[in-house]
Length: 300
Image (cartoon, rainbow, N blue to C red; front, side, top):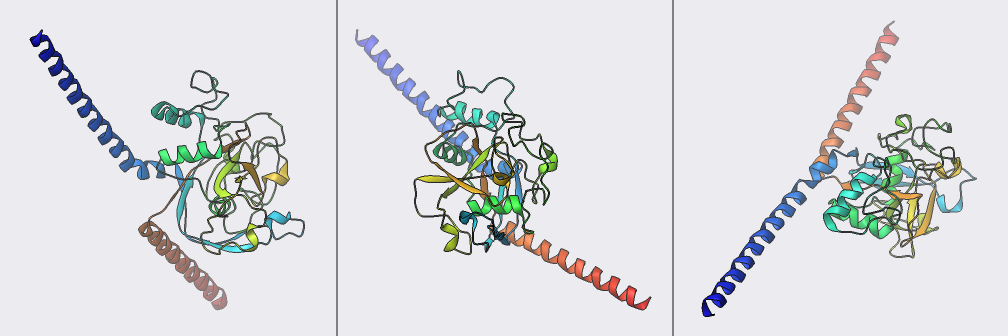
């Protein structure tokens, strides 16, 4: 009996030792995953360099919540080239045990929907996924600059709206489409799907009056609120809601089949400095070229 008790005790000690080793290995793997996330994320993102852009609508008929148009300075950052897809979100669910969107069955999305944007996720769900990716949701200002660029374009691709050619909207398809369906709809910074398909959660709480006194540099959004900001319109919306300046709010706990999200990540100071140096060099080359052309024309 004593030998059996001793054997059992030794077995428990061995099991505890194995469990400790396994836990340590899991911790090391998680540390490795976190360490490589920044570089892995960049492969799925586009870079937006530091600098100013005009945020909000200038037109007299722009809704009140888009006014006034104002200059915003942002530091450099990365933003998802495309909205987060069902495939990407399923990996998060499987790795963490996080709850799946309500319309999924047995922990996975409907057949054939892997490259469609994930939907029926709340603002909190989107934040949880972003944190797992070592990223965050873009601020409203970051989202708008990535969509609009620095030339105040009304739509991500430019000034002319054409239904069915550059985005999924106006109920023409009636559901979501793959996030790479409309290459001609890419934005100023080459981000896809920033108009139509699904609205996208931003990090900011929503406030109709925020533009009237928001900071001029890296505005973080209101300090609190009951709603999160959504941008970009959806497959159900018409052109007014697809403009780069359009903004709306939704309760943070709401999950709809018209709302998804993309993630963002700040650039390092070194990356921003390199980008700024390249931009300055390109400007000098352009100015020198213009001056040379002018001299040649005068001599002729």
